[in-house]
Image (cartoon, rainbow, N blue to C red; front, side, top):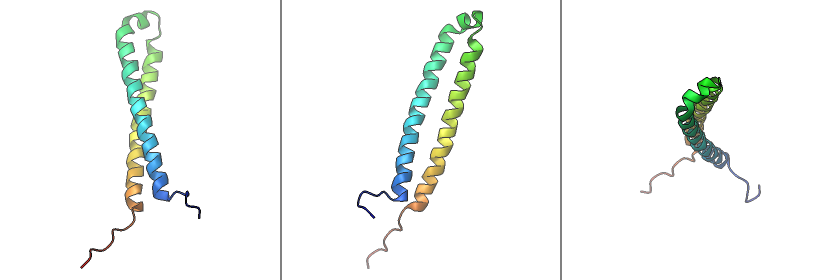
Length: 90
């Protein structure tokens, strides 16, 4: 095996880091979209566009929730993949 080959634990930790970054951006997107929706709610309703924005907010929120679930799942897997601790020295 080459020196640059990653262990399964390293791959899982990399995935967790990437998902956490995605979650961060998803949360920011929901907040930004919500702010826009609240700012223009009345105008969007008049233009019959509020339903589209509400749907986007719902999908973005669902993505955020699913990212949280996957991060939790991978964190549990990472715990299982941790090498055993060395026995204490006498």
